[in-house]
Amino acid sequence: MRYNSLIFFIALVCVAATSGAQFAPGPWYDALAKPSWTPPDVFFPIAWTILYFMVALAGWLIWKRQGVGISLALWAVGLVLNGLWSYLMFGRHDIALALIDVCVLWGSILCFIVASWHVERLSAYLFVPYLLWVTFACALNAAIYLMNPGVLPV
Image 1: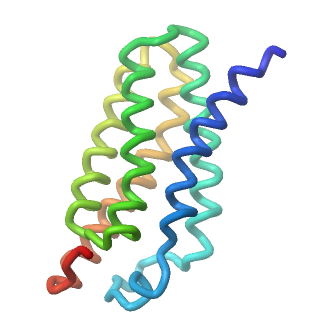
Image 2 (image 1 turned 180 degrees about the vertical axis):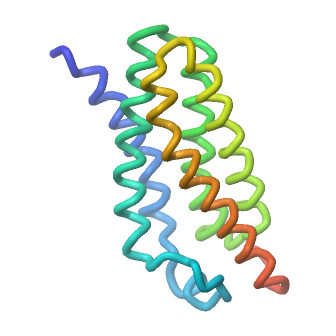
């Protein structure tokens, strides 16, 4: 019973993660020019599974410590932006809008780290790998955008 609320946070993160499953890369993404440092496709679900668990744990710890507040609001905004990215990139094929989304996501992650630092430091630490991964994702999204100038959204 003690961890029922953690299960709820994991479920919320799983809902956001379904966007990645629903809007998978597919042939459109495979045909795009990508930088040589693009990780193999198999790497993404592994990285995201680990990161999503850390995101759920960070949100749960903040909720346990503070309840609803600015940190939890930033956590929720980030979760929505995270789920939206797959739709924009793979559902709409809108590389530019996906880039804007991932940059705003990066900012929300940074704001969460700052806001939660004095509330629940472990939550802030749990978001550092997420920030690093999304930094990489921003760079990758930007490189794909620049390498595919004629690609328009559907």
